[in-house]
Amino acid sequence: MDRKRKLVAGAVAVLALLGVGTGVCIASSTDDDQPIAGDARQRATEAALEHVGEGTVIETETGDDGAAYGVEIRLDDGSVVEVELDENFDVTGTEQDDDSGEVEGTDDD
Image (cartoon, rainbow, N blue to C red):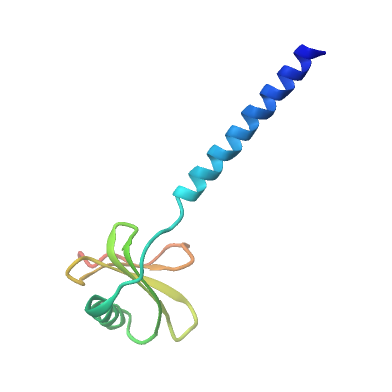
């Protein structure tokens, strides 16, 4: 009986460690992008709105998915797009916010 308790206790300990490890991995991989501040926010917002036309800015982020800045805009039809900008506030791409695909290609053409 003593050996069986040790095995059960060991198994419980291993499962507990796995659970803690998984929690740490999930916590460390959360999205920690920060809102754009100051003059950069104004410049990013203007560049993004100029690119898509009219809409309402609903969120801004620095360092978003490889872009220097990301600006989420709700368009007049209700859809939401994210405009990606480089450090010079030039548009590098535009994606639908629901991750269903790209709305427009990059501006390399």
